[in-house]
Length: 230
Ligand SMILES: C[S@@+](CC[C@H](N)C(=O)[O-])C[C@H]1O[C@@H](n2cnc3c(N)ncnc32)[C@H](O)[C@@H]1O
Image 1 (cartoon, rainbow, N blue to C red):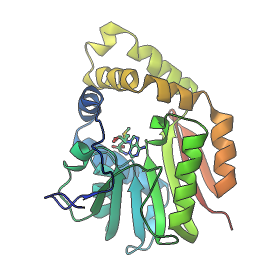
Image 2 (cartoon, helix red, strand yellow):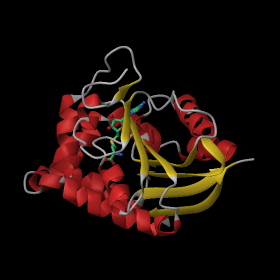
Image 3 (tube, rainbow, N blue to C red):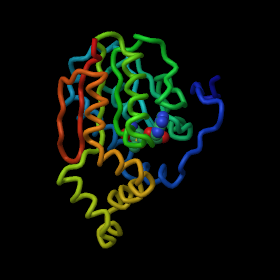
Image 4 (cartoon, protein in one colour):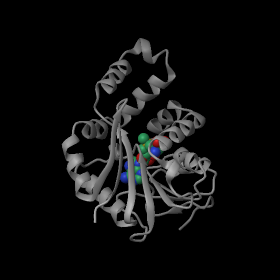
């Protein structure tokens, strides 16, 4: 089933959206800031060398600025999945969008070349089960040797300083982005800290499905690039 904007709806029941969290997410960065950030990040992760007609899916794509960044880098076969229809509706480009749960992808086996996640795994409520479900699905839809990339928050000294700054009202009252980050973290507190506090579970599930090519930890984020295990 598709809606009037051409977004394919996978879920039969309406998914509840968290309006306060979405408002904070939109306040954190402007679309232009986000697109520039994603373009620079994709370059660092090697996207300059990927074939421009590669079949790329971005999971947990939100308002799709990651997809717009890929489009601006010249990629032509783009898809996005997110459970928030209201965020997907902010996108107006040519990619195919799906409103649904990334734990249950309705794509064919071996049908995609790259799967990307830029901040979404830390929203999963149950570790390790939900992570296992997402990674299983990513491996299932990637062709043999297909590439999986994810970027997520990671517990580092830098991130702890950011958390401390978020707790100081004299800073959050002066700096819009810090206030937005504070509100986002509050809205996702349980899953966010569950993610940050379970590195070994994450590493174990990751090893089950993917061979690592790159793992970069910088500025409170982990960037993983890997390939499906044979
Ligand atoms: C932090 S946002 C990241 C959005 C986007 N990747 C970005 O960086 O702008 C996380 C997104 O995950 C979505 N999400 C959370 N759980 C999901 C699930 N199980 N399936 C699909 N989307 C989910 C939320 O709706 C939200 O848009």
